[in-house]
Length: 401
Image (cartoon, rainbow, N blue to C red):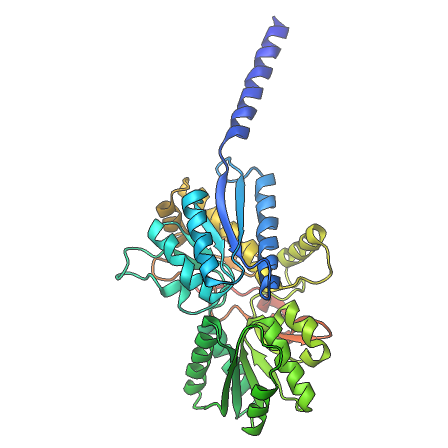
């Protein structure tokens, strides 16, 4: 009798485990540039997402189901991003997507998620328009969320740093000709106008350009005392290298992409001193950040993240998604969106602690008070103003509405 009961119990427990193991995974899209000039951002974001996903899955998953990442390389090309979005939605039937590194790709692709009522957590691309494309009342609901510092925030920070904090009077803007660069330049001009400052030169260049001597020379001849930038790492490095070639050194202050490994490594010593807004700098200023840094390098090796901001924001986006699915008790897109807009539990992230980060009318998790300035020094990004990350300033939280 005892043996029979034991066998029955064993069979029952095995059946329960089998049912749990057989539960369909939650399919989550993961798209970004994993090759090419933007890959340091894309790969770092992907690694951060994978790290968080592994942690959640090992802890039992979400709603008793494992998260399954469906990865696609959009190559930082708008047309590829559109193809990826359609495939993830129609063929893979993902319940949500994490990613978008490049503003242009996001603009082109995220409308398909909007039409399908599938939420997107935009964890790197910063173009100010991205979280505002589908706002009510023009649209019934907005399915695009973001946990990155948008360019309205960054451009205001850059202008404040250059003009008010450091006292420069003759800025020049150098930007790439992508949607990201052109929209960023417009945001910069608007921020400078609020400070009654006009740029002395505006020059643009194309992705893949390897000689910025002409653009830098025009800025020099215009009397610029600071270079403000909106571009991606490889081309930004050519600006620093062109200044060195001309024997002309003025500060570079630009968007967060100055922290990319492709800028730091290609510019070498010429890149030292460059400054940029950062939501995350790879220093263990909080226990959560220390644990994240250790886990990241244990999983992926190296001594420096190629793009720390991308890795941290990618990591946090998974935990925001998991919290929303848990609260919704569903993988239905509309219910996930509603949960994201009304998260009732705090999510401890690497960048910040998310406490009601979104509302129905505000899909930006990062507010102006969260980023701080980073500085390239000796091949790494360090805090530009150590006092900004000291003590209780280390963890900055979005003010409640």
